Image (cartoon, rainbow, N blue to C red; front, side, top):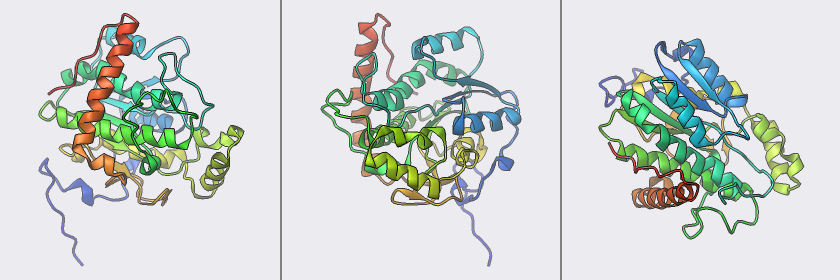
Length: 312
């Protein structure tokens, strides 16, 4: 039986019909400069490694206790390098309940607000390197459980840094990606979201010390259904490198899933998020605008100025 392909928006075969993409499908990345956050291990490391092996100049941004996001962005700009791709992979999961120095609940502060700020700080470099520049941000299968608390985006009233805080941070990532992509239309910069399913990484496998039934169940599920980090990283590698997805900004790269269980194949297929907020354009704009106000207030409190709203 012959297979029919539809044409993509970039004139090529529709990338949504491409399944089982692997690192072998990655084209040469010579001349490209890529930042991958949270890349000292796990999926971020394998994504950075694959891009470097294909010729990219990769900068690994790992957690540092004495350097802020603002400091990192300034240090990068001093290098006078272009920036073609930003991979927002850093994140935390089921950490002890606490708040960041800025007052955010830890999970939402690192997983969502941190990526929001870094992307804005580096947007001018991405635009300078356009067309073809990309932002890829890590979401999660748990976006299905996320629910935005519009009266407390910062998580000040959160009683724990648990699964629902994590889930909310991840649906907010998808909403951020889609709103930014909409605002960037025509700029040559596109934004994508990814989720890997359950993964056998340090982020997941060390959670028994959280002393919760949730973390015990997740640990068991991850050991049974979890996939290797190198395979899971394909959901980051493809949107960071595949030229055929140009014109499909806002897309979500994911293995097939059934509620919170993902199947361990076709890791970089293009699918639709399960949470209705990820498909609500009014909610994307509302979240973006409220986040911008909060972030600028925090920056101004520290005497760090403000960031401008993203436009094309």
